[in-house]
Amino acid sequence: MIDAAGAEGLGGLRRVVLGGEPIQPARLQALPEPRPRFINSYGPTECSDVVAWHALDAELDRYRAVSVPLGRSVRNVRLYVLDAHRQPVPTGVAGEIYIGGAGVGRGYRNLPELTAACFLADPFHGEGQARMYKTGDLGRWLANGSLEYLGRSDDQVKLRGFRVELGEIGASLARCDGVREAAVLAREDAPGEQRLVAYYVAEPGAAVEASALRRHMQAQLPEHMVPAAYVRLEHLPLTPNGKLDRRALPAPAADAYARRRYVAPQGDVETMLAELWQDLLGVERVGRHDDFFELGGHSLLAMSLMARMDELGLSADVRVLFTQPTLAGLAAEVEPMEIVL
Image (cartoon, rainbow, N blue to C red; front, side):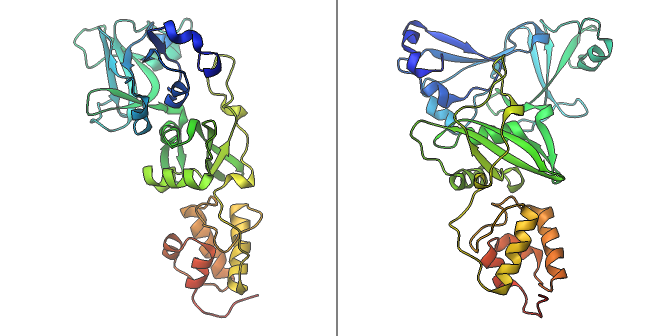
């Protein structure tokens, strides 16, 4: 249906219910008008059927700024967003989605331990036998009472001391101009160096640069949630049942990292710093206008850089790197002292 070239037959449809994966509004916009009314549905198999729904606005452009919510619960279903202690979280705060009410299953056949972990007593409902299902999905309540999906709890990773939700990052990337589909992965292509890598499919004819994507992400998210690399694909790989195949996403090439026009380092200090950056960041070459963080650097690597600089007799406060993150900018702030060659 999403293939606009063969979508002429959709003219007779009034409503289309979608589910199973987060909606990518740009793909729907590729369909010819008049389009049917799209409805986002949410319902794990363990709860028998759809438990929440949201009718998308006809003007799909509004979802450039916000994600498509899961919406509100259907009749006789209760939705909860709970913290790690299974207590309700305030509006706008992320937590895990639990489902209570009609439709919640009795458990998994012949799997008592998994049943005990996922099908729990519902403490928020008066019925003595009420149960709720622990979905493993992350979400948060919006101010209008709708539920927003933030990804799977197993897509939540800890990166440089921060807990990061990959689904939230991917949703932000998908809202960037010129991006049709997006996904984000935490990769460890070098031992001990885990980095966020963004994968995207551009809209037809769109010229999308990694540097522009990074600027968009920096404006939307804190620095620790901004991907280091941006890989353009013709299409996102899918499993046989139509879900994103994360294992098939390729490792980023060197040109996937946001780079600036190369200008060779000038002078001994810039040359020495460039060699340190190449070693720490795993890149082939570093120009004087390259940005430490755009090349995949982060706060822990910044501390490693300062230690390595000190060994070579180059002295600078680590805070300088955050205000002067280019090679030339950092070199200009290095304290004049005897340099060990």
